[in-house]
Length: 320
Image (cartoon, rainbow, N blue to C red; front, side, top):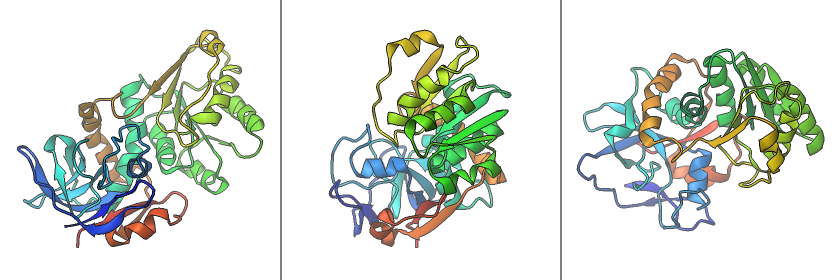
């Protein structure tokens, strides 16, 4: 078969011939129809993801849409120890898959499920989120952030504060459901002040940035809360701005701040898969806006570093 193959963490994957994987008992070999290029895929391919074991060569891709031998189409999440999904064929564990509804577009599903899953699982599995509450999406200009704005509103948030740096992408967020938009561009301290004023009393934060923006945001927000004893659930999902931050101990004593992560490990694989059918249903109904850019897998090396339009996600289509 052909696949995207990583042989060096310093170079994008190349389109090569690669031995097809052999299914073990309980697995199936599926024809891959579409596989999304997510930030999680990029970090796995360059060896920086926290689950990376450093072994090469590897096939990138963490999920995709495939066709089973009997013709059924499914969305599936690759097992942690299985080759990735950016190939003509991939291994499927039925326990980590959900069927595609009739008429669902494989490219759209492959583009949307991963970025949507992060906030969907976070709000439904990590905290007791209730309709009428308010949410800050920190890093709302990425694909996952745009999805988080829509999902928070869909799940009943009265207010969704969307914060990010890219002015063109910020303009997209109002129609997607953001009630307040905060630019983080310019002077970092001034940006933190703007954010603190807009998001002082939110109930939950979905954080895709971490690093310096979060380091400034936490005290800026907590310092303006009317009731510091009111719980603030800070859900760390991504680290676009850096993997670490410095947090004064006084912040944790002076407010009811609850910091947690949402991802592989903090939510079980079974818990994540249990959320897929309901999310798939919303995507099939068109509840969530999705912008996908299909690219033949043979062009993986060029597409890996090519710029994309704001809000669009590259989806590789390996099948011929």
